[in-house]
Image (cartoon, rainbow, N blue to C red; front, side, top):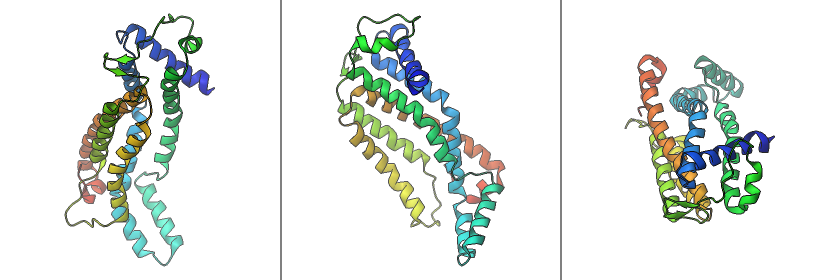
Length: 248
């Protein structure tokens, strides 16, 4: 099912873009396919990021509950669930939404991975009958980067884009807020840890996967800017968000 309903449609979409839209440049085809997939998955990403933001806004109220019921774990749990219910927040929704995205992302990675591992005659066996089979595939992105080899330029650009996306996702806290909170410190550290992990993962992978990662990260930056503006508007009409005093 994974091969038939995820891998093959994405593979055929990539070949279609390569043959008809990208001027015979596989790098451009990968960029276009990545943007297409991210647009399709935008509602899932939006819900996930918005839920994470609301969870951050509710931290002061959660800390108060923990303080008021520190000797009664049962009351603490009930009050916490009531708070989530009141503000329509599911603390586990981000995990579920991430799991919903993973099959598509794994399929995309497998498509790009197979392009440099399998010969063309093996690849085209998964083409739909109505698509023309390319006689040769150009693995030079803009005639500058070999998509089958690793590219430090693409890796560094992907890490930089991911860093900026992480910075945009961070709320700007007031000066009188406690900067030593564990959750806040962990969130700030992830802004740097994420790009470092990207560097380690992409270092030895072909540039085809790096271009996908870079395009997805740039899309995430634009998406985060859009979401921040939407949340800022909602904050004006939501007493809870306005009271929290967290700006983006």
